[in-house]
Amino acid sequence: MSCVIITDSLTKQYGKKTAVNNVDLKVPDKSIYGFLGPNGAGKSTTLKLLLGLIKPTKGHIEILGRKVNQKNRLAILSKTGSLIESPAYYGHLSGKENLRIICTLKDIPFREIDNVLKIVRMTQQQDKKVSQYSLGMKQRLGLAAALLGNPKLLLLDEPTNGLDPAGIQEIRELICSLPEQYGMTVVVSSHLLREIEQMATHVGIIDKGQLIFQDSLASLHEHSRSRIILHTDNNPAALKVLKQAKIPARQKEGALILDVHQDSSIVKVIAACVHADIGVFRVYERQMSLEDIFLHLTGKQVSL
Image 1 (cartoon, helix red, strand yellow):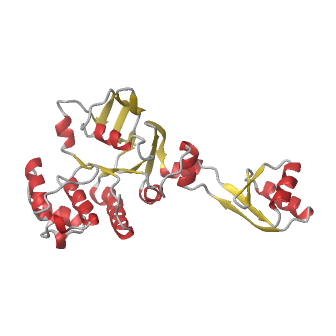
Image 2 (spheres, helix red, strand yellow; image 1 turned 90 degrees about the horizontal axis):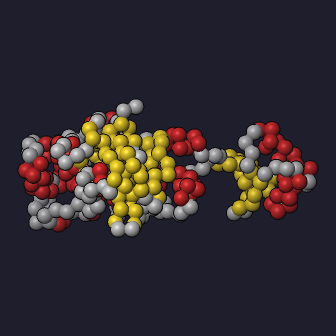
Image 3 (cartoon, one colour; image 1 turned 90 degrees about the vertical axis):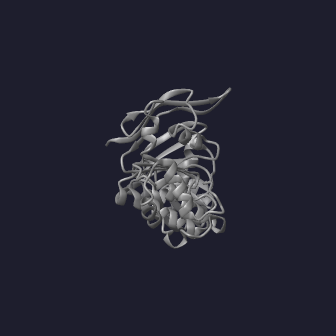
């Protein structure tokens, strides 16, 4: 699979602090790449490095098949859209007037404005002053600005931050439609695991500046171990019985978690409990969620 972004040992240091540490990104073409990490993990710094807003301490960046340098940086960025942190606008001007200014700066024809406003579903609000926009409308206007010029790559830093549930749903649906309808590759940074789980095709997890996981979302779930959960009327007694039977188990949050997966082993568990006159309420398999995996990889609880 061809990649739209490839980085090699990308590093950014601020004095003695290393914000990004030897990161090797591989973002497949026409994917939605979820860039996950706790606040302060290095997500925004990495995106700024990709956009050339800050210079790397070391490492190389390749975007759209070309190694980024000072000579070709602007040519590559002309095919890249971005929404980094909060979008800034002239509040006394309308949404459409703000987009006209961006078109002038980017040397993009004004005729593209109607198309991007349609994509972000803001046609009816285009003549309203931005100072009267809700936070969700400002985020959508920021996306419209990023989409001007029909970019091949879109970099979005926490695009649903501060939005209400309806606004989050709108932005999510919009992002999900971009690769198929417009052939774009989208990189979305977030600490909201459930949002990424519902959008991304591929995931990169960064913590303390280091990339600790990178693969497809499906692969992440395939490699995450499922767990067998056992509920009984006497968990301490059941745990003792299972240990005597040399069945690995541990007690947590009012249930027993079994480190077995074969049907024969589960039959053995139930038989051991019944033989010891312990009532079995239910047995079920629980797949690790993305939140569980993240906590396992980083040792940190993050926003849901």
